[in-house]
Length: 262
Image 1 (cartoon, rainbow, N blue to C red):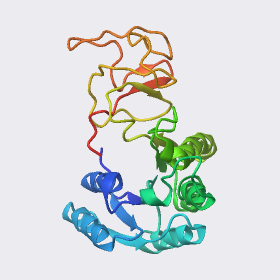
Image 2: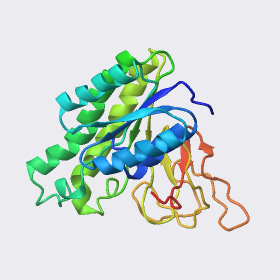
Image 3: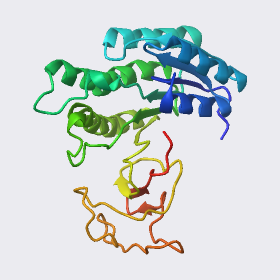
Image 4: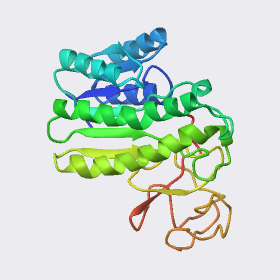
C-alpha cells in the first residue's frame, strides 16, 4: 500500500518496535517524525534510514509523561509537516522507572507507567486530531505480558497501564470514527511461548506461525483443542489448523506473535 504524501509521527521510534514501524512506513512512502527521549544518536540513525528510503522526516525530543512536552511534539509536527495522517503512540520508559512488584512499587513508579501510556495517549490524540483530515489513523502499542494473569509481578504498573490504554483506545475508536478516523490497539508480542490469543480489533501477527500450546482466558493451558471464546475446535498438527493467525473468530481475531523478533 502506497503512503506517498502521508505524514506520520511515531513516539519512541529511535529504537525497537517504534523504529521498525518508522522504517516500514518510510518504505511505503510516508514522511516520518522520529521521536526520542534520551538516545539522540539512535534517533538520528533512524532518520538517516528513513531518508535512505526516499522519505522526508525530522527528529523531535520529548518526555511523553509530561503533557506540556507532548504538545511541543505536535507543534513541531505542525511546523514541519503542516498536517498528520498517522499517529502511533509507542513510547515507553525504561524498565527501572516502573518495574516493581505490587507490594513494593512506589507511587512515583505507578504514575510513571500511567503518565507514559494512558495520559500520553489521551493528550496525544487530542493534539493529533486537529492536524488530521478524513481518514486519519491512530494506533497504540500495548503488551499483554503479565497483565492478564499477574504472573510477572513487577509488571503490575505497566500491565495495568496497558490494560487501561486498551480501554481508552476502544473509547477513542468510537469517538474518532464520527470524524472519519480510525483508532486501534496492537500487541507486538504476547509472551515468550507459542500461543493463540483473541484480541479485539488488532491486526494479524507480523510473523504468524501455527501454535502448539494455547492458553485460555485465565492464561492456563486448559482444553487446548478448543477456542476459549467460541468453542470451535482446533486441529493440532503441522498439516492443518481450523483457526489460523489472522482468521476472524466471530468478532475476535486469532492472534499469535510467538515468532516475533521485537
